[in-house]
Image (tube, rainbow, N blue to C red):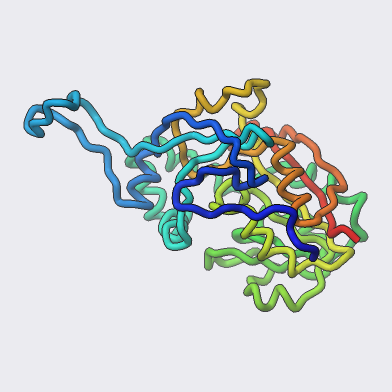
Length: 294
């Protein structure tokens, strides 16, 4: 792989774009949602009343504050706090399992019911397969990076191998195999899938640094991220309206994806917006198929 065109500055509190590296950033105050603040930092909301004897602070509930940052170069919108690996581990420990669901339902009543739908899986896999088929010879060797159990992996029934790399230790579906990074680096994959992961991570560049060694010149890398509602609006000041942050800490624009991948000498074969009618929501997504530049 060639040298990157720009380096991403890594700080505890971001002051430059983590997609394109630009320091031309706009900022607006926001709050970290109570579930995230508690799970990551053990910061709980507090109610300030007269017993606090704070003469210069008004009574009421106090929440964890943060900032919404917007890159004026690539329109990337993101949370200023960049979680460490340890903090990410706390956030996603037992993801969507009993302890996670119980804590989240405490702060967000109704989440447990919604989670049962999420755990059923998605029903737009055929749309993903249709997007990818022109660029693959089937059956193909597949690695799903961040693939959970493999239930949402495309070409489950049209693969030579189906490997899953994920931080969880859940049992994978029949026909799939959970693998380590070391194992994945020693294989040859036709398709690497990374769906709905890039919106969660502190540094997307670090994720690409991990994935690219699994690629050969013929490997297709498929990336899928939400096209968030607020990003659909042609509004350079959308950051002023982003007042809270949850587990999605990165909101992508088309340009931010293009610049991020270009920095790694990845050639975009196709970039598409998809309306996916899944079991939980009617979501819009970015779909990207790319290869290493020759």
